[in-house]
Length: 364
Image 1 (tube, rainbow, N blue to C red):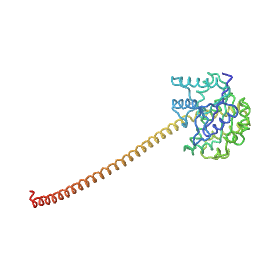
Image 2 (image 1 turned 90 degrees about the vertical axis):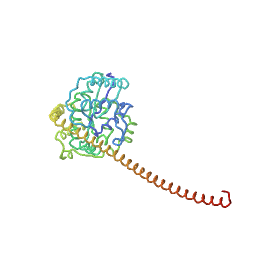
Image 3 (image 1 turned 60 degrees about the vertical axis):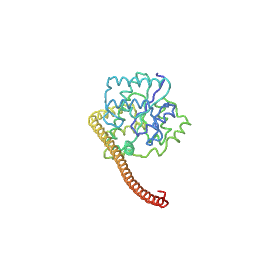
Image 4 (image 1 turned 180 degrees about the vertical axis):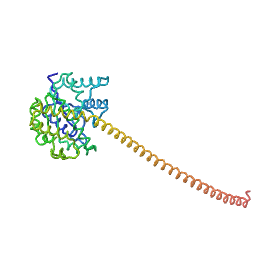
């Protein structure tokens, strides 16, 4: 399988992973045909393979986590039949992709926190794996996730750490490159050339590059643009976020070596700090899950109450209709009685006249 190169896009949600993945196609990287469809919050497409996405979702559920739950840090792979089944499914998927494609890739932000599952799969299949790590100012991600999902800044900052720290520390000594989303928007050709050089791909195909720049990338894709100074001044930002992002900016600018000793020391220290924070983050994640569950129950109760109100309104309408029908029946009965009385009177009147007439004519 070494003849097949796999490029995995890592990064936090709303950090430009979709744009990076789409850019890989310009370099001849096959992303597959079974992609998750575009949506209102990502109209240009997510560029996520549904099969990889399904495995990641199932794995997160089994681990008691989710795409937006804090606390999935430094976890150990359980040795269970469910995990074995997922591993076999993943190995089959990767193996089939390798057989069909000389150069292919996949993107799902969930993967950054699930590298302990995927990396042994890549080793067992024997594919040549490389990584593109997408980064973006965390404040932009905070703004984006607050507008889309109502996430509080503190939750987003720590989720960002849980994605970006393992994306760096978990890929040491592999072929990899860090791409800044804002720089990709400003100069896509330069950034794709960086990716091609770092990962051993071909240079951007000119026609495909023009299409990528004109049809996919738009200034409107970037709704915010913050600086490092903005991040440092933000009141709720954890110091680890400032430190990690500062290093990522340098890596995206090629001002430090990605596999240099200082990067290794810096992210090992950040990883240890994240492990220390893990119990608190897990507790916050658990409480958030309870709040979501309560909110879900409240929404269900509200929906059921609305259904009951609708049914009560329907019952009230039926009752009013029944009352109207009963009143109408009473009126009808009264009308029938009146008509019957009139008919009886008419019959009596004409009956007497007929008798008198017959008697007069001596018929009776």
